[in-house]
Image (cartoon, rainbow over all chains, first blue to last red):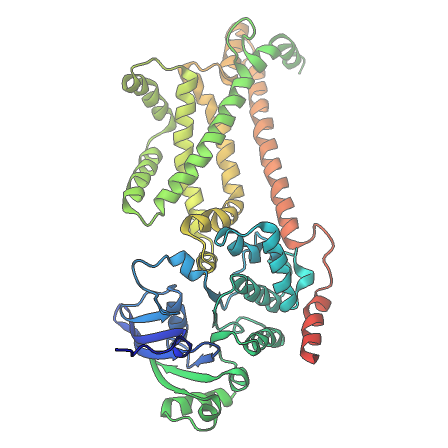
Length: 253
Length: 253
């Protein structure tokens, strides 16, 4: 009975027939898919297709009604799960940054390590500085979020998520709330993370980012995962009619 | 004007400390003690009631809502009589007017403060809670580290006016013979007989100075916190340099 697969090939995030309804509305319709370690998956699709809902189910910001989601082998919706400990292992970046405006940049980043991981403040601050260096904002360590541009805030938010040393990072439309000239600086940081081998799941409309960085593209429409493909194949020759329409709509403006 | 000054010369000490040291402490001192006790005890109780009221646990929510509806549904004066006559029945001991007044003020103000605090908490963007939970903070940590510090700050104007009304409401202690400043003024008026306008003008001026300076102090604190968050407190470093410098070099390398 030696049928267990080797840990290396087991997926880091696995969706198994996931269903979610808001009342009568079928928000997620039988989603089954996997994200492997080191993989960068871009989730795209028209608005209202369930992309954000899907990514938010991974750290249980959204509940599901049936199916299962496993993160690192752990059933995300298991009643016995220590949800706070679990969430601290999943980096999450929001569309609207959601930095804590009453805390300085350093305090924003240190909040998790100090309160959840019980790190010493000095140690957490050193780490915060390293991470700020990495996102190119070392000089802003003692600034407050209100003093930063949108792009800078989102980079701090990425540093805040990285501070917990998560095995995977989830990005929920990280550049959608930004002015166009600030999109690039955030994508740069995300690209460098991908180069360093971070497992990433990104909901984004930045198709150039998907083409350049993604290992796989997931296309969603009306709550269903319609198509998963290599980026090259997806952009040059999408299999589904809905994906073809989505891509032509994107290009037409 | 002369008569006011001569009243102050004659009865200033009575207004300030009552009969003390020949009798019990009273006057403005007791008004201040009542106010401070009222604020210091009512505030944490108000926060606790507010948290219970928005708690996911029904057995906490119901009694909190009940307290708020009952207290808001009865006049303060009636509430004072209630405590005055029923607390001795419940405890089997006589209770001083002063204690009665403290208990009444604390319960009464806590109920009103609770509604202010609840509004402040629910007025925060939901993203703040989500971001805190996503980092792995527990419900309690989210409240104490992220939600309350912001909510309380946003509520400062409403809280201050509630505090000011606490100070003014201490004057109702007069009806159960608490030796506070209104009681002292009334004593003076009774012995002078002929100068009610002057006596009550002094009393009004005392309340006004007390309440006005509290309002000004709150405004001052508010400005300071604002200045710190917006960075006008100290010179900010050039955002352009900080934003592009390290990223650009990383890109080049």
